[in-house]
Length: 330
Length: 225
Image (cartoon, rainbow over all chains, first blue to last red; front, side, top):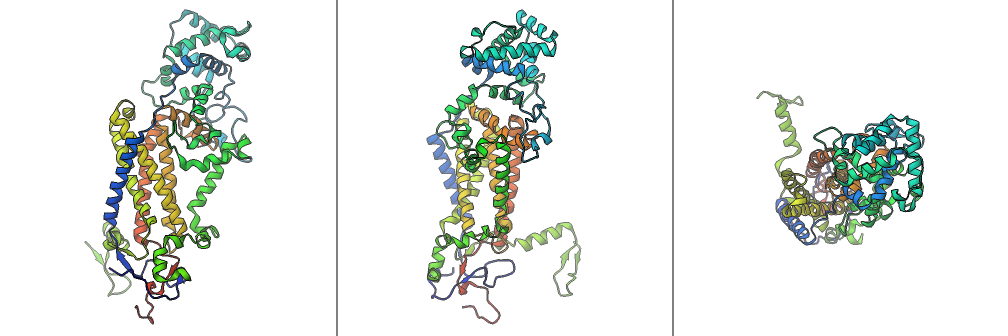
């Protein structure tokens, strides 16, 4: 093993100016170093550390929100959301690609809308997929069946008139309570939505929205979009400090560490122009893509690649070597 | 095995003619055993910062092992079993350690300017590992099948949809995300980690900025001390 004793002080040279082998390999002094032993020790220490942290702090498992739990805990929010799904004014109904063909709904990067170019790959008609479809697939209440038949027989304009009027009236009602909606020409809409609420509270809507005619299913897009259109999920997320303005992207439920490594991604949403832009998501994605490519390309970026030379943190990292070779005074 | 004479001259080494032989020759030339598993390192490899590279790999293996245990029992196991919940906790905390070690390792390599000396691809593969790991962790959060997954997926869809990615990569499709999390992304990250480690073994650890003449390659007219 080569000694690590200090060598006589003599001029040091910058590595990049010094003669180097063509393959960049080190030709200087070496010392014994057991990589395998280091790896085994690291593996044992990390495993013990993880075991200890898991035993001490466990992991969060906040129970999921279902259409049943939502409709039971917040029936007025459920019915108000269902009304917007029926008249086509909900967040999902007006989202644009990849769910709906809503003109001008897609976000843009300058004049380009990648969202629009990618197209509608998961088509959703909130009225039929979230409301009338499940009602039709789960018959059992003659009143609701009659209301649904009346709805189906009506023209599109008539349907829009009924559902739009009821949605507007519901929003004006105290506490958005369906029982306090002013009388009006709503056709079968109140009966349909009341029937949907009963279905949801009975636990029959979760399966109906998920399965959509298929036995096996792993795609939760439709029930999740329906739930997310309401305020119940957002309120619960805010209470768990998961909302966007709470830097929620890097948080976890409870007091657990989340995806802290997303801090920079989250940061952009907190500052202008992103925080006030209708195209914030697309713009932040572009910024993060450019920065990510930049990090990967650091060795090829003049100026950036020289920062470690200008800010000599390397003197701390290699302080033993520099001290032993007397280069700390150079 | 057929051997061909080296075209550089009659005294040159013999070259294998088969694909297998050429692959072996290239592998052993690029990674001779003493370079692949060295028991000596340059004298400057003496800092705590070097620990975080191997600690990252160690944590990665713990992540893979605990993830494998979760995969054996299925994605719902940890919700209904105390043992499963503990294994999930192991998985979570090993991921947190993995990411922490990797970030420290990354910063350490930045301040060393570890891309010097034809080591640019070592940096590039390391940075790709970092982003691949972020993607893998992200899909892990999506497949917890609890409230956190619901909230994250309904929020994250907007970013991905805004640039068209969401049209093919649907964060609310549990089945698709599970496949990405337990197979596709670990496969990609694992492969890039392997390439990264091989790059480190091939090029060695980057030397300090300031090198003492005693450690410079011997020139023909300069005797080594």
